[in-house]
Length: 379
Image 1: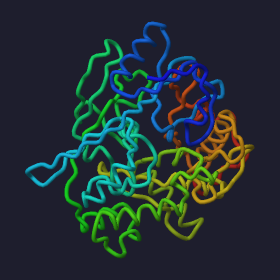
Image 2: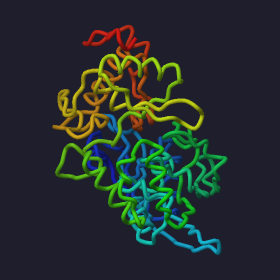
Image 3: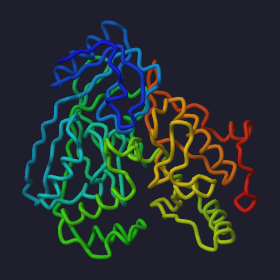
């Protein structure tokens, strides 16, 4: 276990933003993690678990507690008699490395998640997903440490409250720290992959049906790279947290209202996708563009990616405050334009702990207004 005092956190995140941690711990084993938690308890200091920092926005004043980085990364592959594969992954492992190996083994279940940066533990907490696939669909169990008594516990799907980009672990008072996850993967099914892409609005990704999981991974990576959604230290367009906002899910009535207005205004329907419960998922990127923001739109040191307007990036030494002000501006304009609230996907760490990003609410949009006048076609 390695402990550092007043460690700058910006270099440990893809957004490269944030102040210092009072204590920064590299836990090289589960026992190191437990020992670090015991130290934090003994000093009555708050705790934050930082994986790859790919979905975390850290306050400019840092964190007044222990930031613990799980650095244990073992992966075990166990074939099953039914033809499936159980893969147990330490929380600190790079999840995309696991996706790559699963595709080399021609296994399906996480191939659409190719190229998403982050650790295995963080991927579960976030319930990452892409192109119609989510990690929850192949989740079997997780080992975790209980924060109160530092005991080990096993979590199962019914403990997780899986939802769109959400789990029971993604809340400020979550008492569990994931140490490993176990997934069940099946042989890759090319027909199912193509069908899933078509169902979720990504038909173009399977125009030529992939023969193997590696073929499909290549398609996914090419698609993500075309949107600058694969981290590159030399390209500021990737210095963000991926999608800053989740795609909003609305009622059928709201979807019809917005679609009719889009046809009148743009002479074509808006992008939308049906959900399993009969509602409609909208494209947050489309809403942001329609509210007046183009790709590359600049806001002080921050900007939208030049490739995808759902990604807020650190263009030039942006501060956390500038990122938040930009996100607030976007959310307020979108609300005024569409009466649709955008919800941040990013985890926001303040000096005291995880908090909601302030100022992103319909009420504040109504009170403070926004530079753009509402478009009556969308009201």
